[in-house]
Image (cartoon, rainbow, N blue to C red; front, top):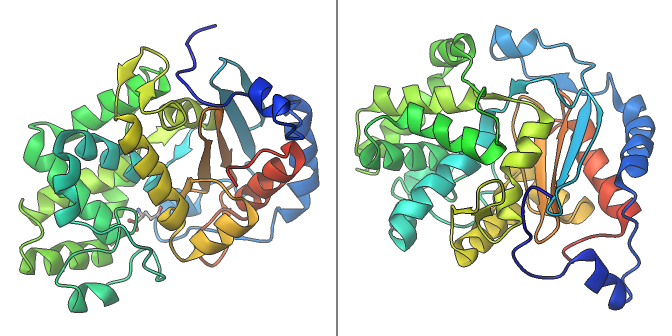
Length: 326
Ligand code: GLU
């Protein structure tokens, strides 16, 4: 067993409490995979940059990593993809660790109810983004990282490599470059917030780090590994390093629950019922505190930028296992 569960309810104690759960994860993954295959062809692959538009739309993979050390996977779970906004959870964790409560003077903790790249609320809310997962909020956390780390891109890489227990993870510079060429709204957001003095560093430097973090290439197994610290009271189970305090990990999970899927967050809470984070590359990661993390990747998206099969697979996962935080 590569690591130790920190605390909390485990499956055995849940059974003692008479929860009816099914932990035959491999069989459940296989069933989910087959039941959701018909969703292929129904969504739309992100097409704002060629590197995403050219991804094979039929890719589909799922991976689970449990705190007891088991990995389960199905389909293309070992094919790397661009994690896009899933990276916002990593950067938020890095700055929350360093800045603590001070961070919340720069970014809020409320759902925005608008799309991931909206500018609308910033005008009336003095350049303070609603939460760290919409683009405006993520640009602020990236700006915070630039203020506390000399080499933010290499620090992000080390952080993600450590969490995923995979030293080969890297950026896709081609994707980062394309994001830069087309990132007009992100440039508008960061300039607009600079006008409110809520961006402290050079706008191009902030955008460069943001576009790189979005271009990180991980597969479903890597991401299930990398999110496990949020199921483990903030401790990286691969090396026992404390990434966040238990209270901070709880708060990051709470933010994912209410804002992790932008204006699809209510639907995700309703149908899946877990803290989660999506990216327009088609990945969705969800966490069951004290138990496991799960990543689904299918690049075809719904109109909110959520992976269509990803959302359905996670809904089926909580339904079939009977495991939920609610
Ligand atoms: N690179 C995308 C953007 O900033 C990320 C959006 C997402 O994954 O939701 O526009």
